[in-house]
Length: 393
Image 1 (tube, rainbow, N blue to C red):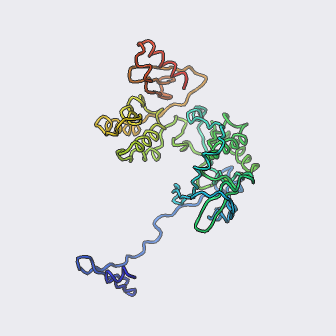
Image 2 (image 1 turned 180 degrees about the vertical axis):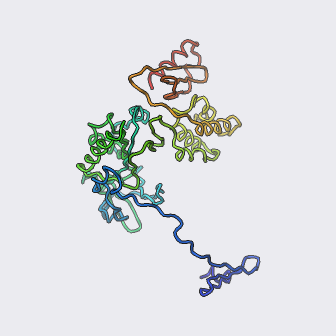
Image 3 (image 1 turned 135 degrees about the horizontal axis):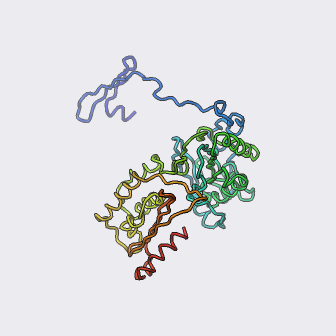
């Protein structure tokens, strides 16, 4: 009301106008516009229209209540533990509640169950022509927590203290436990027609007939283990599919333009933390960039202890070059294990580099900076170090 009075605001509901006084004393009139109706309509994805998937509608349940309390994922708590909460934006515009479990994670015994290397996951897709992708609905929340550990997950809200009865985002062992579960569920299909990375499932086949059978087997497994997927985030019967920041097709793999947009929009770093963030994001696609570490070297030097932050022309050039290389990144071919490979290696005082090829097509680039104690190596030792590096990765 004070604001309305300050600017002498007068609202005429009949004429649908608003009159107010601008800071310079000028009278301003604002007229309502006619409603334009529905600007955008998204089509629903009923399972009835998708071959094979329509037989497993129970794997793709309708939306559940938004409140965690309504789902039974949390409950009121009287725990001596209490952690703060924060909210993170999701791709669909909604917000995910996350708990700051850093203090709990510091005293948690770490589960060393290995997460798969992204590169290894893609290498098994050679020859595949048909793809489907399944994304589990709030995957972590489909795992229950041991009753004795539930009080340790307690978090503070302005409505009181609550605790999780299911696995929460932010717990240090959550990815390892969930990866372990998914590997056990799909063990007999891994490296045959299924790729799993935490809650993302990729089904790949050489023919549509094979894919129909493969898709049915995967959905049956989900049904048996009462794991549920989110239909709106799943895609079926595709000749190319986005997966883990890449576009996968029978022609090979390439960077996902939608994912690298965040790299392209990255502003010039002003502190070391921003440099580290950019290099980490760009480095995710280093297999697509020849001599990645040589290009990035002017920037990586800022990460060394005791180096003052000075953004030079050389570092700006490296920053721009990495962005450019990502926009023109090649399509990498998928390796055929029945055919021979060719490895090219190179070494200099700046670093080591190699490229793996098959029938004249690039499978992957790899490079790294030269360690300080190896800078004085003779040429033949440097070249041998490049070969060793190529064989290790």
